[in-house]
Amino acid sequence: MDNLTYDIVIIGGGATGLGSAVDAASRGYKTLLIEQHDFGKGTSSRSTKLVHGGVRYLAQGNIKLVREALAERGRLLKNAPLMTSTQPFVVPVFSLWEKIYYSAGLMLYDVLSGKLSLGKTRLLSRKKTLELLPNINPKKVAGGILYYDGQFNDAELCIELANTAERYGATVLNYTKAVGFIKENGVIVAVELEDTLWAAVGAGSEAAAGGAAEAAIAAASQPKRRTVACKSVINATGVFTDAVLQMDDPQADTLVYPSQGIHLVVSPQFFRGGNAMMIPKTDDGRVLFAVPWQGKVVIGTTDSHVDHIDLEPLPLAEEIHFVLEHFNRYTNTAITKDDVLSVFVGLRPLVRSANAGSNITSLLSRDHTLVVSPSRMVTITGGKWTTYRKMAEDAVNNAVFTAKLDGAEAGRTRDAKKCITKNLPIGDLGAARELAAQLTLDEPLLGDYLDHEFAAFHHITYAIRVVDVVVAARCKYVRTVEDFLARRSRLLFLDARAAIYLAPGVAKILQKELNWSNEQRDAQIESFIQLANQYIIH
Ligand SMILES: Cc1cc2nc3c(=O)[nH]c(=O)nc-3n(C[C@H](O)[C@H](O)[C@H](O)COP(=O)(O)OP(=O)(O)OC[C@H]3O[C@@H](n4cnc5c(N)ncnc54)[C@H](O)[C@@H]3O)c2cc1C
Image (tube, rainbow, N blue to C red):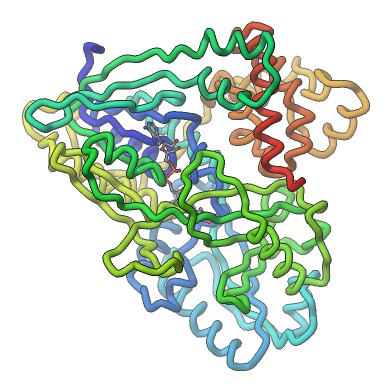
């Protein structure tokens, strides 16, 4: 057992866990956060990338939920201005009734945001609607409504939260899994941890033909275990919540009802103009978004209940069909599977409510849920990215109260205080920026690590530089090729084929940075290519 006793151990390195680490550390508690894979590997890198109040929950009359989320939207845009932006949305309408109904709702949406409004909702003529959405199918369009929401890079914000938590003294570890609890009188006093790095890479290359790479990884993947003492535990594991609850108490009730959502990413040639489109109710009652993001367009999403929980969920054929079919119906394009650059899939940790007997997951609670177990573990789940800060505040308040951390015995690093995150700036990439500035002059482009023909194309299209990979390895917790290509550069989500091409170049740079053997480098490439193939529709 390590000598140190943590005030709070947080399990899960997505939005909720990382937000809790920032909250706990900035209050002065000795904090450890562990993530079984990379930060943001779960749902938190697979969102629609919107910082929003949830317009559609207004239709369900849930004004309190929307108002709270809008306040959080405003705070996030203020506290993380470099990582967030304002995105104009156009809702096309097809009748006078729709115009009245949606404009009333969207005006209320803006009013509810109060001083944190991102811009006034406006009614649009048919002509203006067609101008703002150049690719809309003009048939039957009667006009539109313009409103504003926030947008962000979800995986980047995870890294910035990890960085901020560290700045306040937290220890944050990726590739470290909670595998057991040690209890005294029924109360958790320590957490058993397992190092998962090479097991994760090895598992990814399971299907690859045997060989040296696999053997090297098998040898390196013997998990290392250790135990850390703690006064309280926060379970912030998203769709894995029930597994951790049952690790604590095998008889624990299940909480989470996972709902899958997919996104298709296409070139902006199919959706020009820089404005996002929102169809609040397609003919089968779902919401359809087409949102410009990082030079591409993200189209989604779906809401399908799934029984199987996986870190890499797969899209269902009917989900792909739904998104393609509806996008084509509302636009003047005819995209096919071949036009899709990447498909990414996320699992919403919706919370079962007592009367949620049906399979219609859109009726389940979108608010967050907090449970305190007899072992004193605090479980927090549900909610959404936009409300991560409030969820973290609630989780830490409960951990402090349950474990009496504000008492005389707490191992505080400074005087424990109330939550300070409402106005806390997020991100401390000063060190990353400095390092990038030092390295830039001498570093060749990543393409120089690849053959020239390919390099010429990708310099222009994606402009990933060697310096980006080096800085990510030294300052942004990168441990694998996937970490860089999926969640630091986002290339896997933007263009999976391009990510496959760049994998060998990235691996060569990381080999040097992270002291890999040739076998380890090759296993990383194999594992990544196998994964990236799941982001391509074959
Ligand atoms: C399709 C889709 C679109 C969405 N779009 C939006 C949006 O636009 N805006 C918005 O605000 N919200 C959106 N959401 C909701 C939002 O993404 C989620 O609510 C949020 O990311 C959940 O974060 P989390 O930290 O609770 O879970 P996760 O991000 O899943 O994090 C949990 C982490 O726990 C780790 N873990 C599990 N078990 C262990 C263990 N034993 N030891 C260590 N680590 C463990 C996992 O590896 C995982 O990384 C969307 C969700 C989906 C599915």
